[in-house]
Length: 178
Image 1: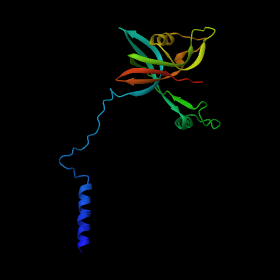
Image 2: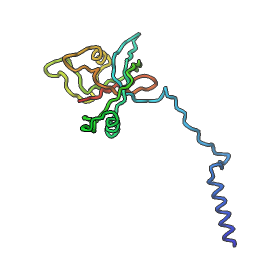
Image 3: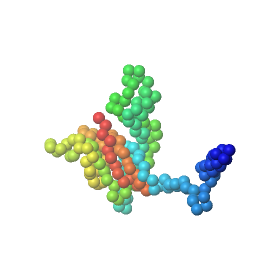
């Protein structure tokens, strides 16, 4: 009988201690983390349509897109492309651009630009070669965006992965598309 009383007391104590309503007065309940979306780092994939500089500050006019890779690309491809002969995106990625509304976003003063391929000026030894994550200056990038290279590579035809921090673009990475 004594064992039953001790067991019941022990079970009651464990239930009391583990219940969600019991918080000792010296402990503080955890508070949810409140994040400010303006301060958050986010990724945006977009086509860069134009660059402008006003009062020493660069801005980008972008056309945001949805960029899919792997299984996600295959899924959206099958939903949108009814051809029964082709069931997967040919190069493993798929772009959705249902809304062609442009947005303007500011570049951080120390933004970095990483290119995969661009026309280096049509010189015989460089030309348009693939150089993974080749850093270039913002000024060089603005020059490339501003040119309409109809004979060579037009960098406006490539999507870019933008890293946005505190509402400004801190990194631009060209996405190579075959």
